[in-house]
Amino acid sequence: MEKLTEEQISKKLESLEGWTYAKEAIHTSFKFENFKDAFTVMTRIAFEAEAMQHHPNWANSFNELEISLSTHDAGGVTDKDFKMAKAIEDIVEAK
Image (cartoon, rainbow, N blue to C red; front, side):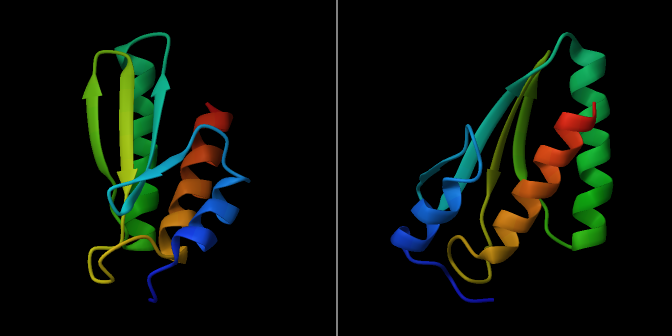
């Protein structure tokens, strides 16, 4: 998978509200009503990540979830990260 340029990343971010680019990764965060809701979404994301063979870097604190996506083999952001970001958005919206 080929690493995207900053211009390509900026263009693709236009379709992902709340996502930003920094330090060779795309980032977002979500706030849920409670820990159970946050953990439920994390579990759904985990299953999707396994299916896609692409795993996020993330942190959870009570009802907050922070996510970073980067394709380590490519040394930065690729289309694979944007596919995973879209899947994450779909999971969060379906909650």
